Length: 138
Image (tube, rainbow, N blue to C red):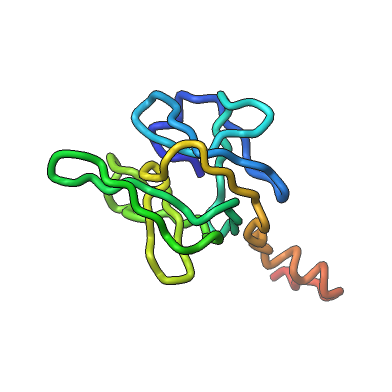
């Protein structure tokens, strides 16, 4: 998914092996840009696994300034949070420590690789077809 602020930006879905860079798209949010075109936002599905080049850096809004913090981790899983609040950012990364950070708070220029996409849900009909059994129709 791409955060609500990126709906007016050219997007494409993520693929395994994609090299992504954190970027400010100038529309009120940051996200992942495609390596082949920094103007294209790459949308991730919840459950996508990422590997960063270095420990992940993000900004925390302090009283008077944005303070940069580093998470001692180079892997994360993409999540969506606060879905009950429509006018807020939802795209986030969850780290092995359990810490969850909004994607829009990541500092620009960090590089990540898509390691794995979440499995596609299997419909009941295709599950039976794959197992060689047929669904009975009533």
